[in-house]
Amino acid sequence: MQKAYSFSGQRQGESIEFIVKGSPWQLFPSFIQFSFLVALGIISTTLSEWHYFWLVLGVIFIVASAVIFKAFYCFIQTTTVITNQRVVNVAQKGLWTVIITESELPNIKEITTIKKGIVNYLTNTGDVILSTNAGDGGVITIQQILNPYDLQQKIAQVKQPS
Image (tube, rainbow, N blue to C red; front, side):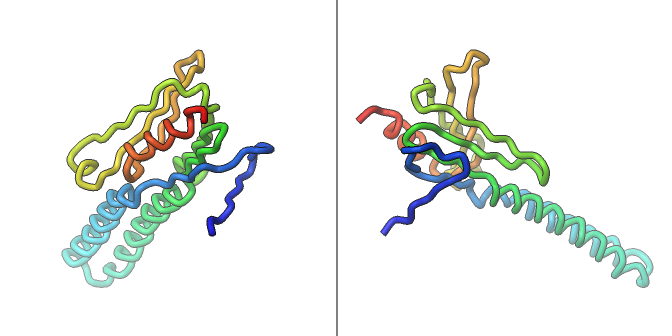
């Protein structure tokens, strides 16, 4: 049995076709930063006076943990909802910055998939860019998702009239 989803701002008669979350691979750079900061703290404290070891290591661990927390929070909060009427992209860019972009399905004129670099090819991640009929050349970018080509095809299928 499939769970019925709903979201704030959902219209009457609008049904959710699918929900897209980012790839966990987008957290990898933050884990590298965390590891680098902890290693830097351990190395710097072992080369200095012993009585500062725990203080320096503690401060560096708190900063490194804040980096991980921010990345994880943005990862969890970023969601794209594709309904039978529109695409709604909620992109959390920081702790206090969120960008919500939406477009009606008939207004989407082009769907582009982008995979940049060897890491995206190895992990099968990338971006899907939806170009709209908006006068200012509007675009919706769904960033760092798994199987971007599959999403492109799903949106094209939902967009086509039955």
